[in-house]
Amino acid sequence: MSENILTITELTQDIKLVLEDGFYDINVEGEISNYKAHSSGHKYFSLKDENAQISCVMWRSRALDFNPKDGDKINAKGRITVYPQRGNYQFDVLSMNQKGVGDLFIKFEKLKLKLKNKGYFDQEHKILLPTLPMKIGVATSPSGAAVKDIISTLERRFPLASIYFRPTLVQGDGAASDIVSAIDELEKSECEVIIIGRGGGSLEDLWCFNEEIVAERIFNCKKVLISAVGHETDFTIADFVADYRAATPTAAAELASPTTRDYLLEGLSSYENTITTNLSKLLKYYTEKIDYIIGDKTKNTIESTIYNYSQFLDDLQLSMNKGLNYNLKSKNQIVSSFLNNIKNLNPHLPLEKGYALLRQKGHIIDNKDSLDKYKYIDIIRKNELALATIKKILPKEIF
Amino acid sequence: MIFEEKIKKIEDLVTKLESSEETLENQLKYYEEAMKLSKECKKYLEEAEQKVINISQN
Image 1: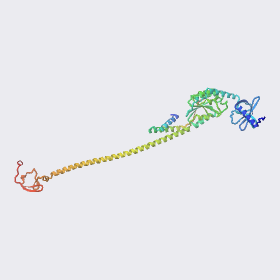
Image 2: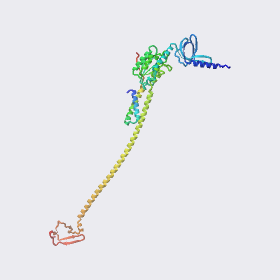
Image 3: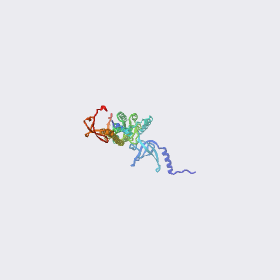
């Protein structure tokens, strides 16, 4: 029968598995001893009670908000890890708090659960930020860095906004009730957004933001409320109830100024460009249209004027011709009747018809003259002249 | 007109100007109005200084 022989490494691996799987999320209480803060930032110590002890390590990356020393009674949260090279197991501390503060942790978790069950954290109760908040309420300590950070951030991003600052107690006795009155006052003021918060600190320092009266007041606030308590890693009940949670007061001011001055200035410039381009295009279009219309119209007018004139000229010529013709015709008529008249006056005309003229001493004898004064007369016919002597003159009646 | 109203008005005018269904006369009117408001807003933005109003503690 062959026994199953393990190497030390294999054994240690098995122990590691058992221990690390079995103790990965545990809370312990104990007293610190042999506390050493290494220059690397990691802390090494033991936790003990009357009958046992365990070596502990707290890596530099774990947040710690108090300075532990030997003898401190603490609550620690962590897991067991095995260090194979030494064959050691140790408690890897994720976080720890001084005892008493540990009670606060339990209180925090209890209240968190209670409010969560009441629906205080539900998304449906959250109010949306306006896009252009012009009045921003701030409730924080007048002496802390938070108010300076908020003001300088707003100054940089959106100096148009007025800040309604309500100096507020954010630590110690009476802080919770002062935060409640600050929210009351800011809610009644003209501000559109309320920022409540403070800089970082220990759980005890931040505790007022975990009080139930503060949570109630935030939940019932009818204005948008941003909670900005502590650093990135600090979460408070206020953060969960608020409409928005900002990691820091600076981040809260950024949230409260969603539209920045630079953005607006750029936007206005781009509007100006757009409408100027549009309008100049439109004006160009109309100018071309006008040119086109005027060009055509003018051409038409000139053409039709020319046509009109030439028509007129034609007409004129026509009527002139007509008039001329008429004139000529009537002139002709006049001339021909004149000629006729002249013809009629020609004393030789009757000769053509066989009549004769009587002449005496070169004068034609007309009807007014009586022949009885003459003895000799010339009788003129068309082709003959007779020299005649008058023998006797008789009155007309006897013809 | 307060700042936000001016911004809103400019946005309305730009929309109208972009629709180009307006008469030229109206377009010119809107353009002038938008430019005037924009200049006013820019001036306001550039000259704005943060105002901090203290609400006294009881």
